[in-house]
Each structure stands twice: as structure tokens, then as C-alpha cells.
Image 1 (cartoon, one colour):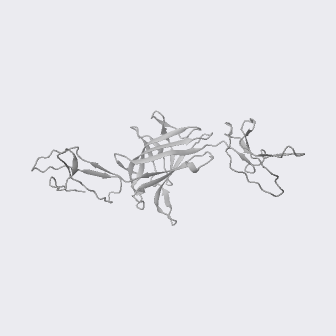
Image 2 (cartoon, one colour):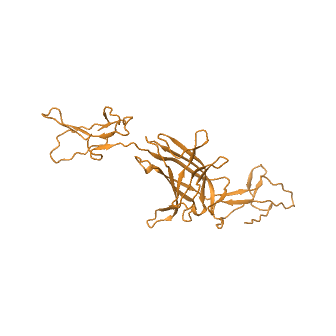
Image 3 (cartoon, one colour):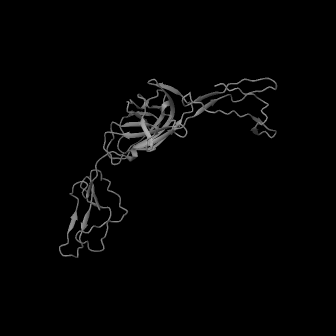
Amino acid sequence: MKAAGKNGSAAAELAQWKVESNILAGQQVTTEDIVCKALPSDIAGGKIYFEVQEDSSYSGAKALSTADADDGCGMIAVGEKAELSIDSLEITASDTLEKRSVNNISCVLADVDMTVSNLGVKDASNVKFQVKRSAGKTDGSEDKYIPLEIGGNLILGDDANETPLIGNGNDGGVFDYLAYSDTSGIISTDQKIAAGKTQKIKGKIVIPLSALDPEDSVGAANLQITLKSDAGEYESSNNTAYGKVVPTTRFDCLDKVSLTVGNPVNFTLATQAAMDSSKRSNITLTEMKINKDGKAEVATDNKLCRVQLIM
């Protein structure tokens, strides 16, 4: 097996098999797996092909080459393409649990950190992200995904201006790639991913509350994100990644409370949940006390305080 680069460089041998006996008329030979040598650096635009050489000791020994065969018939043409991939994706509930209305849809902001790459030899232009969310199961008990039901901006930068990084969404859950964070953390506007480049998309992602799937074991929002462009690719299976946002509740209370024996003290405990406010969770308040050794332990007599929880 040989490979020839785009610029007409000498063909490089990738692998070689040796047939130990004659191949009879009508007989088929299957090769074993073998470790190949590295492809030439200029293989993009070149080809991979096979060459079969008869034993030179035979009279009139011949050689058969598929170098000039049609693509897919003993010869593989290596196109000059992009090669997009989502290298990593992490989505977590934001500490602030900020809620926001987007196109009259109640949403919550979550932190997102995603890395995308183009390992091909051609720039990927008109880059887009298709985003879907889980919506129960199919008849075959597989996860069912439907387009995320918000338009506008999907991911916002952490800068003061909340620069849109992925936005202009349509009804099909398809969003334009607008900007990214460079190595210095500065937001750079560029709607393409150049060949050989890796870019980070980090900021806040807008998630509709309706994306929290009631059929998920913990009621999480399960997102499917697929990276697309106008450029052809060698492989597209690495263009899709999955993120999960687990419903989270934040508690805000005083750092400390000064108590005087015999005098009631009132203090506020506020809760905020990154989920539909109509769904209630069991909240448990535990009274702790400091023992004689100065260590905190659960109070078993509950004599020190009485708690009234108002939702």
C-alpha cells in the first residue's frame, strides 16, 4: 500500500504484505491487519493506492497498480477538507442561578466551557451549532431529542458587554458561530474556524426551563450540540457532544447569628431554584450545636430554636 502527496512527490510505502503461495484462478486473498507508516505531510489532495507485484523470479512477472483507478476502486482520493470536532464540553449550573426571559421564554443561565477544533487543511466557514434537548424516550426507549426552543443568542461571553458567542438562533435550534475567547481571554469576532486552529467558547449558556426533562432520572436538561459548516469533512462523528445541567438550588443566609438566652431571633433563609418554581423539593433544616469539645454536632433535643419555613 502506497501514498502519493498532492505535489507529485515520490510515492511512500505505507505497508507491505507477502503472499506465501500461489493465488489460484478465482481465489480471493484477505490481508491481515498491519501497522502502517505515517502518511506524507502533503497527503491532502493526494491519494492512497495499492500495488501488487508478481514474484520477480517468474518469467514475464507483472506489476498491477491502482494509482490511476477510480476513487473507491482500489484507490482512495484524500480530499482537501476541514475536520471539525468538539474536543470538550462542560455545562454546570451557575452560582448565581440567574433567570432571564428570552423571547418570552423563561430561561436560566448556566456556565459553559467548550473547546472546538479544525484539524483539517481547509478553513471551515459559515460555522453553525445545532442544539437539541432531550424530551423523554422514543418507542424504542432511546433518548429523544428535539430542537432547543429559543431563538436569539445562546451563549454569551463573560465580558461586561455579554458579547454573543453563539446566536441568531432559528426555530430549528440552529445558531451562528459568532465569536470565541482567544488565549488571552479576549473575545475575538470570527465566524470561521481556520485550518489547524483550536478555539475556546466560554461564558453563559441560556437554557429554557422547559429543557429540564421530567423523564430524566434527576430532572436534568440534556443537551446535544452538533458543529457544522459549509466545508466538507473527513469524518463527522466527532462533531457532536452532549452536556447535562442538573437542577440546582441556592441557599442564601446569614454567616452567623447572635443568640441571647430567652430572646427569639428572626433571620431570613432565601432559596432560589434553577427549575420550574411550581415544582417543590423537600428542604430539611438541621439544628446543630457546639459540644464541650468545641465541635459541631447534630442537636437531638431541639431546645435551642424553633424554625418556621415559609415558601
